[in-house]
Each structure stands twice: as C-alpha cells, then as structure tokens.
Length: 120
Image (spheres, rainbow, N blue to C red):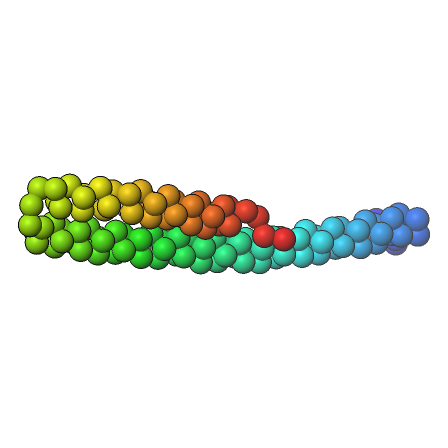
C-alpha cells in the first residue's frame, strides 16, 4: 500500500458511535428489566410460599380440632346410659361437625383466594 491511509468518514464514525451508545442503552435497559423481574419473582414466590404455609398450618389446626371433637364425642358416647342418649349425642355431634366443617371450608377458601390473588 503506497503510504495512503484509509480514513473512516466522520459521518460513519458518528453513526457507529451512536449505534454503540444505543446498543449500550438497550442492553442496560434489558439487564435492568431482567433484574427487576427476578426481584418480583422472588418476592412473589416468597409471598406465595408464605401463604401456602399459612393454608397448610390452618388445615392442620382444623384436623386437630376435628380429631379432638371426634374423641370427645367418642368418650361421651361410651359413657352414654342408653340408646336414646347415644342417638342424641350422635345428632348433636353431626350438627356441630357440619357447622364446623362449613366454617372451616369458608376459612380455607378465603386463605386460598388470598394466596392466589396477585399482590399489588
């Protein structure tokens, strides 16, 4: 090459520099968005996990409550003096358990709705 240097035109350098700046901005925005999304997923996952733990804990409390009521009923039943008293105890137990199960289902439903409802 006979000593001539090839010079990049100023417009081309300006265009290239502008393209690099735009690419840098785009990548920065992409990384920022990815980080923000990752934080939201972590927060959301933690929130859902905490809510699910509350649902499980509530369910276990209800199982204990129902077991205690059943054992109390069984104890009363074995102490009953006659068939009429046993039938009355059975009817009373069924009524109270139906009411308890309805209340428990309502509580669990409310907890489940809060768990599934997206947070603001």
